[in-house]
Length: 164
Image 1 (cartoon, rainbow, N blue to C red):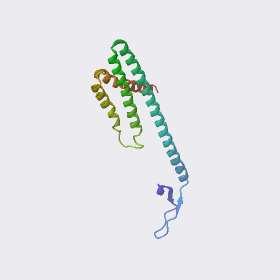
Image 2: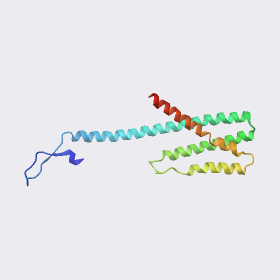
Image 3: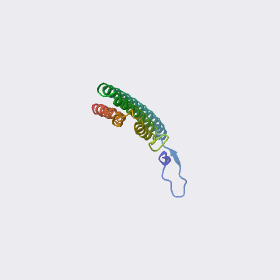
Image 4: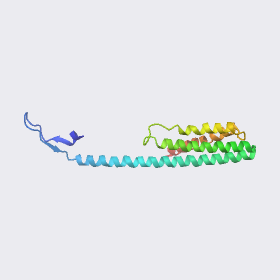
């Protein structure tokens, strides 16, 4: 870039020193580079804010789906199944939160997604196997209730981008 900023005045004969002068638009280029740095930083902040908003929408949708599923289970199934579904749904929400936090750290603090969130389903299966009051199938279905909220958000995002 320094070579682009400095241009020779004229072609000197052999042996004469080369006289360089500053290009007139070099200052403009430097200012535009500074503005690009600022706009890149602003776009990073915008994308981080957009990611946080997406996380909140997914989490709220997962809470709503879980509440609806647990209330339907409480109405139509026995209490053991609805409690198992509730515990599974809560562990799914914890898993989703840990996963979102781990993905949010990507690029800034870490180069890979953490595996700590995988402890949640393992603990859920261990708890269900040790406690006779809980059932495995409703607990696992409750754990997977966060997935419809993610699919729903993806569908909403794709529809809004098509309309734009």
